[in-house]
Image (cartoon, rainbow, N blue to C red; front, side, top):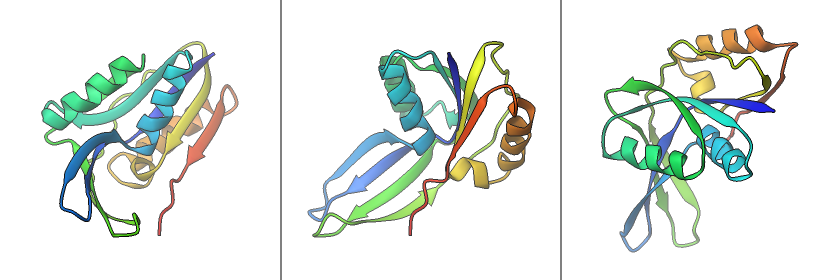
Length: 149
């Protein structure tokens, strides 16, 4: 079984009500790839991020979870600013940068998972749709819209 996950990777910058800030790797597709890697499944994440401090955080997180990486370089890594209120509910602001280069489909592909904001944002959305069309019928395809209010 070979799984290909395609979509955005970003860093969640979470501000607590007391003003403290933590930065964590995130993005729905990245989280799916990490979960599969930690379960021991062969998984490759096709994504886009920069060679900056946030990109290094993502790269280290993926490597520690045994996720093979196919990365399109960007000038800056995407960020989701999450501000928590006193009840722990979050409001989000995204600085999303998304592009998708050429995707090499593994010969033994059994599953393609695409997801979230990267599937709906150009200039990558059309390329993701074309990739889904390319593998339809030879692999299971799943889509996570990761909808939020």
